Length: 574
Image (cartoon, rainbow, N blue to C red; front, side):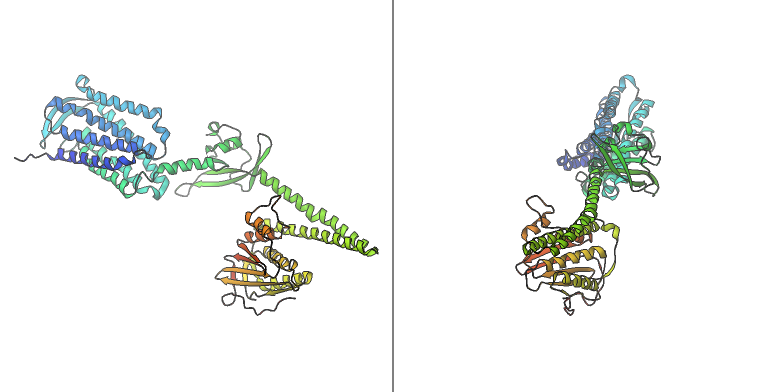
């Protein structure tokens, strides 16, 4: 004769089998963020469902009651494991080891002990009796107020876990959306079953339908696991990243609410404000840093450091909620003491080069000319000529230093349409007259680019001058070609000189000079800085036949003829 297992028991056993299979898949992930506690949840589900399935097949009252102990152990354990999982999964690991969590674990064990000893005191329920229903051993009881209190606290523990997961879902958007939502919703069907049983609602109040609803719970959990491996991409990493990012920025960060009350800050900010971090939380920003105006821009404040005064640039960013409503501000404090000192030094050196030194050298140059005219010694004239050339070289260096200043302030100069060919013709005529040689300008007359004219003039002037001045050929020659590709322009400046020394190019490639490795001037540096300030790049190809400097400027071309390639029709400037 075939043995028929009643459907309530079958449903409970099916849930148990599913949970066991799920545990098999979860086991290799133990040790991942939240995985151990999630395994604990599914383990408690297994204990609960299998124990309840067996209990439904036992009609002897004493033995039937004995199964209530593992059932309630699974029920209570699943709640605390679920909360612990939510804590660790969302990056709140410290909460798992808190006194509150230990208290909740103790409470759940205590309530399980109350259930186990209920026949003695009857505080949880009374009038416990077996009542067959649907072919299984149902239980008829009178639930006491303590039972509802226990279930309420257990429900609150579970709800807290749901809230934590829902917060991760809301805070981190689509990255963790499906997995956190599925896990957060999964306890709801089971919780509904417990409520129906506790209040004895429905056609079969003798049965607790919660274990039968676990396949829905497990289905949602498995969806989260298999759709996107929930332990390979966890909100804990994002939350930890958000927390450590503020600390690792290297600048002070203060977060205030819409009442300018400090709600978070990093240790760097606490050090700048000269207070302990914990004492600043909840304090008005104006009390500890009255110089900061949340509505102003370009602010700077000064604070006394351990050894000297420090200066900080203040940046204010508004924080808005999902509806676009302002809820606070982020205040960053960046130490600019070194940068400010460097700016001051550059300003002083620039003044010395532009005014004091230039004026004194102009006077010296004038006296050299006078002395040279009044001496009859050819040898003396030669020495005075060398001295005059050196003075002129220093004056020229000062002019290039002024060009460096313009390069450093490129952001303030702006851009405008520049017709390239006339600019090159003007430079070529002047430089060819000063240094001799020819400049072959092959740039189409119609080529117009959007750029900074001062920087571009300085860039081409230095490249053409370098090609003419340092050439050892009988007839120094420089050729300027251009190739246009959509909005991108590539300028090739070729000369017939001896080539740029390798050690000069090595310094530019390394990006810094040393006592042993340095250039002979600032021309190449100016070319590099100017190109970078224009948003482009520069490269050098040097050899015995001369040097080709290639300057690439992206997204600058406004108009040209044809494809923009050089036509070679323009005549060189002598």
